[in-house]
Length: 222
Ligand SMILES: [Zn+2]
Image (tube, rainbow, N blue to C red; front, side, top):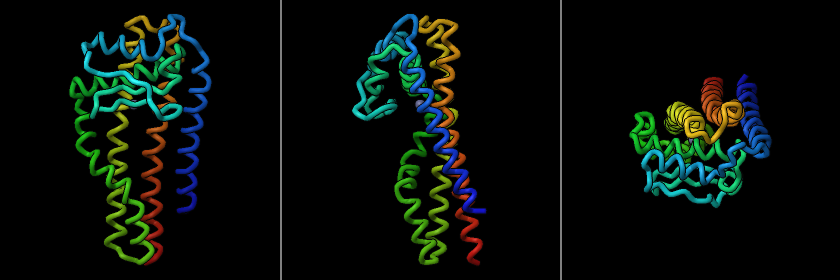
C-alpha cells in the first residue's frame, strides 16, 4: 500500500511536469497577433499599475525559470519568455507581473505565505534528513519532527495555490483588457497558465501522499 502511494505521488509530479512542458513546447511556437514581446508585456502592465520601481530582467536560470523576486522587487523572465511574442511568453510574463501586483497591493494570501516562508525553507532543507534519521535509529522524536516539517511544507504549498491561481487570473484579465491578446487567443493563454498551475496542485498532493506513506511505514513497525 505505501509503495502504491509513493508511485502515485511520483507519477503525479512527473505527469504535471510533462503537461507543463508540453503546453510550453506548444505555445512557445504560437505567436500572438499583436506581437508584444514578454518584456514589453511586463513593462506595459507594470506602468499601467503605476509600479515604476519594479525591474524587469532576464533570468540566468534555464527554461521556465521565470519568477518574481520580492526582495529586490524584480520580475525575472527566462530568455525565450523575455524576447518572444508567443502565447507562452505573454502569459508567463503577465503571470509574473501578477505576483508583483499582489505584493504591491498587499494581497492577503501572499502576506501569509511570506510569513511561513522562512520556516518552510528550513523544513524543506532538513525535513527529509531529520525524518530518515528518526526512522533509521527508531528515534520517534526525530521521526515526528520530520513529519511536522513535511506538514509545514504541505501548508506552504496549500497557501501557494490561491496565490498562483490569483496571479494567473489577474494575468488573463489584464492581457485581454490591455488588448495584448485578442479574444480568440484567450483560450490558449488560459491553457498555458492552467498547465503551470497544475504543477503546484500536483506537488501538494504528492507531499500529502508522502506524509501518509511515512506514517504507514512507521505504524507497521509497532
Ligand atoms: Zn507564479
